Image (cartoon, rainbow, N blue to C red; front, side, top):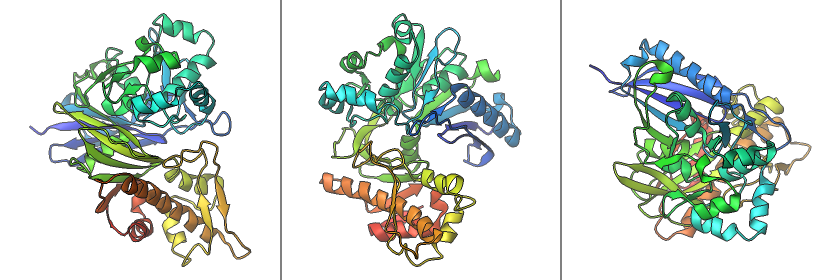
Length: 429
């Protein structure tokens, strides 16, 4: 009998689910957008209950399209937006606040407070991460501060906290499995890269009770089953943060192999083998723990890739759909000196400036929307060059003979060709 796998992909702008058979043929695929909440400029939140309901909806739709029942499945695999923080009640399952999204800058003050107290070096040494509002720890701290009585409830063991994978698994298993895994945990700014556990000294700095946090397990651990939600005891057998899942999916199993994702954000990931490697401006994390072995990665995240295209479409109304950017960009031979710096929520790797803001420079009376659209596409290329050059200049043993790429924007032939030209290496789509 054929074996069928359900893949769950809970992303920033939407949720997807797909069903494949043992020949990797996609039998069912469904997707739905997720509401973005912007309470203040620079703040981005999601409704955790909507995350769950939309994900369940697309799972059912993918199964219907595949003409399969949950009982036909062999296993479930999960990937998710990382760094987003959720806090919820242990007894009721109700979130006490919206999920604070990875790209939100509402916790900059929290991180600055920790750094001003002299904890910045310890944070970077223990976690490998440059102290920033990007990571989960400050988001949990923000929620505990924002909701009256939450700190006391957390200390009494009444509240749970975690990233989106933990939230989904907890619900899919009928609130039985409270877990995360190496790749997600390593992006929280609470995980010790050496011990591969939550760091108690950092938790004391953050005043986050350890009892709030999930058990950390290898990425290929069977963490429970979906019987409580779908009536079939199908195991959840794999869990990876989205960018590490992309690295794995690109078969970058050997040290030095890399991939670049052009999604809502852009992320360069480089397999570093069994030991963490540190490069200025980039961040070491866990890639995965599979079959009893671990792999580390070096990562360069760029906050605005697909987000820039969404801005052109939704806010400036310069394009009707993101794929239109390829045609428009090709209508002019250059940007005519126009550059777009997409620092909508600050600059991330390799600069890490939370106060930087977006700008369009070099405009003249001859500037048209075509030049601005082309500059937006080129901004993805130049940001990628920034992180690639940081990796190459910061390490003697990293080589990038080719760049494996994925994400929605790589359908853009203009983008991929320009990326190859600017880097001087093959871009493999």
